[in-house]
Image (cartoon, rainbow, N blue to C red; front, side, top):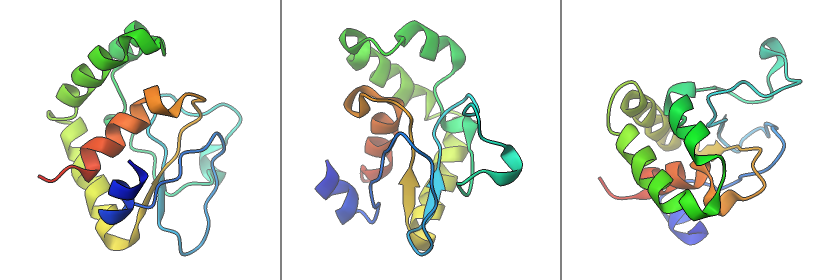
Length: 126
């Protein structure tokens, strides 16, 4: 997956901390809930597009249970095809073409996360 993401122009960095590094591209936190302990005025990332995050209902249903991941991923992909999520996907693609995009997540299980699903949606050919 990393090779596909890089080949499509998306430098991949998914980490449990939120930081911005000059020249690396736009940092995007793909979560509906604002991270605890981070003031919005001094947020260390460029944009927070909560509309691309899974809905509260889907997020609560999933509960980060790897056994539910395939169903979660399919439902989340469906959510990303309708506004306002689809508008956010367009914005993320624009950011990526302008100078790179970094998706940031606090999850420990990245392979079973919304960030992984979103990354796959972004690097898939239209």
